[in-house]
Image (cartoon, rainbow, N blue to C red):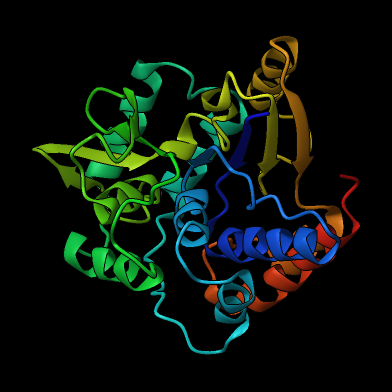
Length: 270
């Protein structure tokens, strides 16, 4: 049987929470990493997906998230632009290339740190800068055309750049330049992009930001189920959401996010 793991977006607290969930699942006897045929990573999930396919054990990855020291930087937040962008996303207004292109325009004109500074953060997150042997799909969006794109080891794109583009929250982090094009966060299509796991018999979805009604994500999961996939899903519960706070980009909440993720992983009905 084929097994796919889908890891969704959720900022730096999402990285910590997803890492905790995976370790908690293993604590409970559900080692979802032992038989993977595919990993799909969007935004935070692109980082976690790459980390878990390295030679670093989950305990060590968890320890990184609960440590006080880190290499993250605090962004300059354009609250007005963010309100527009995430308002569009919440209302389903990021489903077409045209809609995503408008968000791309905001992203391209935003004041952010420079690409080099942001790339250094991504580099330091990764145990390895080489694409893993297990198939890995990462997601991004062309900031000019709004086209949704996927990166794999066959795309001719460096792993660091692929992850940086997938994590480039529009108006928060700089769009990432790849072959003359600019790209931003694939989570603006939807927070999981679970449809990319099509064709796999078992699909595990771990996504902190899909709790509550999410018509696009729900529709993709329904399509996967209709095509014969067995779906297992963990999303952040109310206790975790409250503990992580309103700013998923605040690294001060990594520890508590990781701990709540581990709690949820241990109690998940798998």
